[in-house]
Length: 201
Image (cartoon, rainbow, N blue to C red; front, side, top):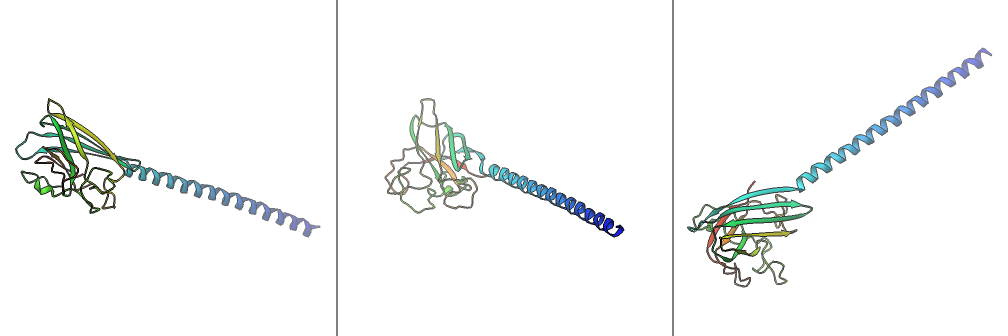
């Protein structure tokens, strides 16, 4: 009888210990899963903050002009919106483009190079089936007080991504005194460069 009683007692102890270990293991699993989920959530938050970016640059006068203003780039949900506010221009239409170098050092703005054209296409109106530069923004209207603005949104740009055909960092915004005719090569016969802004962080 003593032997049977001890055996039963030992069996019960083993069962109790096994249950306890199983409960601990289950609890450990829950903790691990919670930590993994939190890690993913944290990573997701970082990714979102990287995608949603904003950058504002100042327009400097060039070619003896009195042009000034700001250009703001905001990236959200895979699209970049550019908003340019410009003053000091003659009344009427004026061209605005992205150029290949973030360099406004030359008095005439020539240090900014040509139109930003990473896909090596002809100049044209944005979206033209025959081709257009990634920097071919177009024209905007200026009022009698010399002030004008333009807002432009595209998924063909990004701010600081690794895709060289989309990354607008280290490019320049150039404001011209003339109108882009969307036809003349290589830059639409838009005239003198009267404003320049370096797109830098």
